[in-house]
Image 1: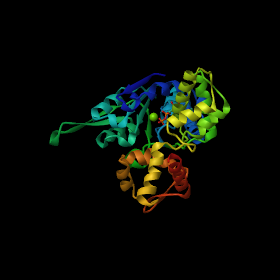
Image 2 (image 1 turned 120 degrees about the horizontal axis):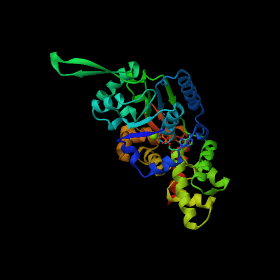
Image 3 (image 1 turned 180 degrees about the horizontal axis):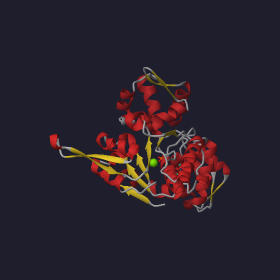
Image 4 (image 1 turned 60 degrees about the vertical axis):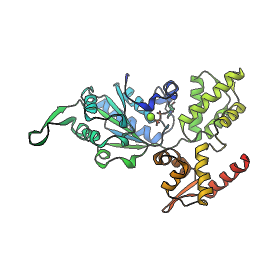
Length: 335
Ligand SMILES: Nc1ncnc2c1ncn2[C@@H]1O[C@H](COP(=O)(O)OP(=O)(O)O)[C@@H](O)[C@H]1O
Ligand SMILES: [Mg+2]
């Protein structure tokens, strides 16, 4: 499988090197997300039997849960090439048209953050997805005419942290709409164990389980903690990661025993201290936090809601009993 990249700022961070090294190399290494994987496997197998392109599918869920990794496995299992692009990075219709017309039959086009694609660019996709055809308007006014260009039958895999923001015409063109959930600690523990051996470091089971419980249900965070712990082990000159090193790393990364990080706690704290525990509207909350609304809504809030630290009410966000207790304990420990 070859991978083509197109202007993807998101991938240019320091994590990406490790991310690629730790990516599952086959479905056997892709742990958890059973529903999603079962669906995808059937779609892939059917496409292989028909020797046609796989149906388009949309992968949605919070960052770091394995959407990009799954897209890579899809292309690999189809025996086709993967083209990775980031939705907001495509500025002109022509850029997307060029990418589409260069696809080979059965190729996979992965568009990350597809909900942030510019609407005029997005419109190009409609006929491409449905009829494998581009409708290009040439000229303006009365002399304008439409030209049609064929596109090879391809598979679009869209990834989004917010499927609710997808436009209707786009959403309805996806056959599969698959939602990723946060991982259970047992699944994370398996991923951590595999990745520790990829990083060629030993780890006792208790240490692995501990990372799994504090990784916010997210493999990407588990990998980050693992890297930090690995650094500690190297500096301490030992071959096997101990629970103590896990503790030290989590402390340094400001991750607490329930897996909440600094920003998670800050959200709970602001609601408690500025808004008497809520309810508070999302706009007001983000203004006080000085954070972008989509970051709060897509990255932080889903986990806090899922774990029951936060409750969503018609009048805004409110701390639960669990959230209030947790923030009071951590404020006490800080003093
Ligand atoms: N199901 C999984 N099994 C094993 N490792 C995973 C899985 N999902 C994610 N990972 C790990 O987490 C990292 C981040 O996953 P990625 O696919 O980039 O997430 P997303 O695209 O959803 O943000 C990967 O590099 C991989 O190491
Ligand atoms: Mg990704």
